[in-house]
Length: 127
Image (cartoon, rainbow, N blue to C red):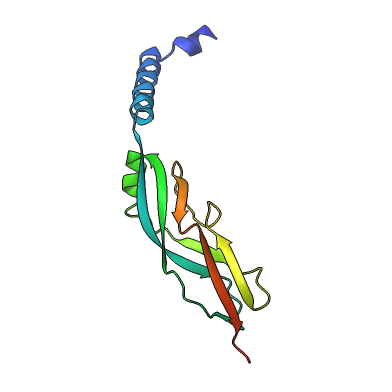
């Protein structure tokens, strides 16, 4: 059993040192906040209804996370996705914007959305 532990001891110690240095460099990355405007998308909109009110096309998100991850957000295609699958009849609907509506990369948190809610007046296409 002792032979297994001491076999390639130099490589094992070197790997441990490299892993520790990598962990230190990542864990010391400062956490920052940023604002990003993202489009609003709609999922499973009923075919017999349409939005009869003015619509916000973008929402500003305040995001917090490590600076390196926030830098990578420029290439990510973020969007607020509103699910209309539970809508069965015309009327007013309000959707809160939170983590359920935005798919963010690991390590990034949604602090708040501006506006925090979107309100829609849905009307039937057939009259």
